Length: 225
Image (cartoon, rainbow, N blue to C red; front, side, top):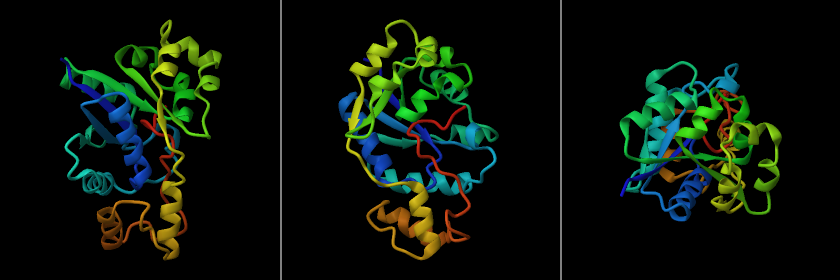
């Protein structure tokens, strides 16, 4: 049987417990064999904002996923550098794992913006879309009724996405708030893994100003355009 691989992209600036919980929900509910965390080099919709260096975000992801044998970090977008387009990433992963069943993890906002991405029809033909729905916060049915989105999805795909949605708890953790807390000298314990917290302290990340001067990856799924 082919491996079922979930692709979970974003800025991860920094990775936090909400990301890990969402990935675990995808593993269990979609019966994935593994989840690849793919940090973006430059998110297309956020080119005017700065990010912590790729190597720092990759290392924080490795620390966060260490010990979980079904989580892995994929550095493809950082290795390519430049603007990170999900179509390029999925095409590359399809070449690396030709027999795998690839699933793209998207939050509601990312899913709604799919028509503005590069090659959305081609992208939808290469992967299964796993849409996240946070309890009490999101309504995927409304998102999937948008005409522009339905136009780029293959026939019947919207219904499939809805039927196979990943239900996750409403986790009130945002990367921007973690950066703000670090800049203000407040604790970030219990919002990101302890090893990541210690790494941020040791490397003196996000201390320059409130917000740390870095962008936010809030939409679950590759930060695309």
